[in-house]
Image 1: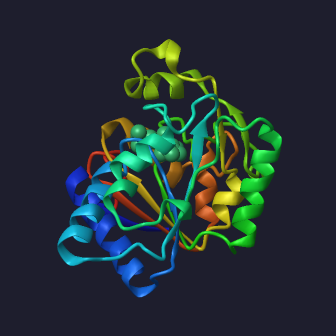
Image 2 (image 1 turned 135 degrees about the vertical axis):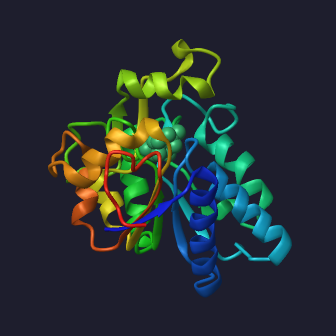
Length: 245
Ligand code: F6R
């Protein structure tokens, strides 16, 4: 894993955006894997600014998001579809029909999982997957204990994850108990992974990721087996680890 140490959240966001923009310009029909949460928001802002000022085009780009809450339709302000539309897609020239997010309200969730996985396979997978990490080591919504061979599936959210995400809802009770998420093996099929980590709250997780065992109890640890992972982490996230900057 290549680790790039940056000063702070803003530098992480700028560096990540520059990398993504370079890829999009070089491969206009790139397939991007996208994450939600707070970590990539700054990166997305930079993509929008660049699109507006330099005209980088997303008209041939396809995106696949990692996850969605069960029970929330795309119109719900706390759904990941709504989040992605409002913080990114609505501000780019991307065609919405090329932005895929698993549905949290499909009648047959088993079929939805199967179809999402098949869609990714048919489209020959993700070229560049953007990831954040949960403080318990989750990637996507793959909570500790998830099988490394998992495909797109339904998960029960850990209480710590519901609490961490309550800030996107009016109160904790509104945070769904379940989500649909790409599995660990789905994520690992991405040709390249860009993991963004910022802040002191992630320093334990970062240490565990880089120096702990590769174990299902810490899902992100599997990334050490991927041959093309770049980590952009700020000083605060790397506080527990010695890295040459
Ligand atoms: C979001 C996702 C999650 C987040 C993680 C970190 O689509 O898949 O794994 O990346 O929960 O969230 P933040 O960035 O809010 O700290």
